[in-house]
Structures are given as structure tokens and as C-alpha cells.
Length: 333
Image 1: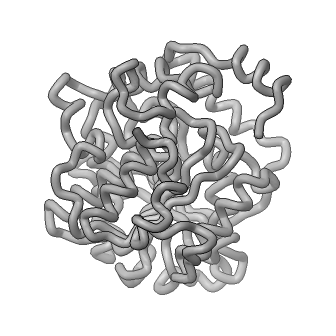
Image 2 (image 1 turned 180 degrees about the horizontal axis):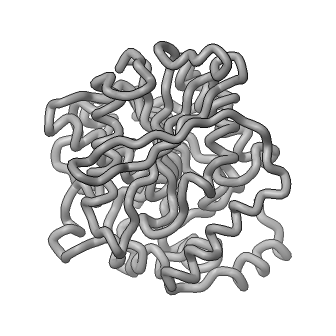
Image 3 (image 1 turned 90 degrees about the vertical axis):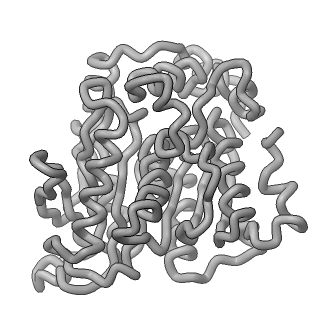
């Protein structure tokens, strides 16, 4: 629950409009981290045709780095958020390093190209190229494809979901698991949106519906792109043969209901899906420090999901949708 004083501050900070360069400079302030932690990392390149896609590997611990344990283990392929327009691996270093340590898995973060300089589907194709290299063992981390999980937050959650659809359709590899953190899955943030959270949370909680419209306009190359399921995965007519999925949403987020509704559609298509709404959380909480209680809660669910120990009582599995679905999807119209 957010108190009235905090609500007033959030409202004052919530405004529409995305000025690209100003937004990028603001995001880059995260690089100036006074609490920067020590961690091991390696920078690599993966080719998407003639373009070199930078990726950064975060080691789970010092032992893995010292022994160069890159031929086994497990990998989280991380796609960062930022509305397809801002953010970078550098800005996400803290969360990637903490995620590696908390899960005891390698984290491979992808520096995909950003809009508006590179419109849809450039960033998605960069992510696909990185995933293909890792799944086909054409990468430093020579791991079993069954031990690779896609993970992304916000626009990164959108890219992870779209990547899973694209992988199925191209037939070159297929992820076994994906973790979508408050993902953008739909294409309409106007008053015509079918999702109540756009109206309830679209003006006063930092990420506004107006900003989402601007982000999508910057990302899309045409009106036709807006209708493409790789742009807005919720629009996909066929959601069969998708990975086991964990979706984490935030209570005070305009994207809340579309993320939960995407989970429902995945479940109805026969996939194994779990959805957990983080109560009291705002969009973007995952990029905060590990001491944030919402981040700690998220890490707990992520570890349970990765270990295959997801509890229905704790999470609300959609396999039993008729029994628990109303609570999980209380925001959907």
C-alpha cells in the first residue's frame, strides 16, 4: 500500500512524453553507482549478420571465474528494459550481478540496438542472434540448451516473449523457460485499452500510459508493426508450444493487467504458466537495489521457478485457473 504522501510525490514525477536524449542521459545516471559491488564479468560479441551484438557475461561466483567454468552450468539470457529506447547493460550491471549470485547461474546480458535509430524488429533480431548462438553452442558458454532461461523486464519482457514466439516459428531452437517481469505485451495505451490497469495506473505512478504510447511510436516502423505479434505478443493467434513461463507483475503499473492476461492466454494454449503480482510495487522495481523488498521477493519466486519448486499456494498456478484465476487476474476486464 502506498501512503498519501508518497502518492503525491509520484504524481508530481509522473508526466507524459519521451524526449529520447534527455531520457537516455537520465537513465545513464545509474552508471554512477556509489554502492557498486565487486563482481566478475567478461564482454563478448555475437554476430547478427554483419552487426556485432555486444553481450556481457556475469559469473555467479569467484570460483566459477577463477576456474573458467564456462563449459557447464546454467544461463539466464537477460534482456533489459527501457521502452526499447533507453537503458543499457552498463545501467543493469548491479541487477545482473546480483541475479547471477542469487540464482548461481551465469547471466548473459544483451546490448540490443535501440529505437528510434533502429526500429522494430532490429532489437529483437539482435536478441534472437544472441539466443541462437548460445542455444547452438556457438558461444563461450558451452551449456546444455535445456539449461538456458530467457528473462527480461518491461520492454525486455516483451522481447523475451517475442523471442520465444520467433524461435518456435523459425524452428532453429526453442527455450524451455522464460521469466517475464512486468512485460509489455499489448499495443494500445489509449482510453480504448481493454485493461483496467492502464486507466487505474496510467497517470500517477511514474510510467504513464502516455509514455508507453510514445515508446511504442518510437519503436514501431509502421502502423503494420503495431499489429505484429512479435511487436505485441498478446496479439498472437497461436500461443502453443511456448516455454514454461513465470510472469511477475507490479500492483501499481499500467502494464499489470496485460502481463497477467498474457499469462492466461499462454495457459489456455496448453502451456505451464505461473503469475505472481508483487503487491505495493511500481513498474521498474526490478532494476532497484537488492535490498529493495520487492526485488528480494522476486528473486525468491525466480529461484523457486528455476528449481521447479513452484508452489500453487504461493504463486497461483494457471494450470488450476478455474479455482485460483479470479485472484490472479483480478485486474483484467
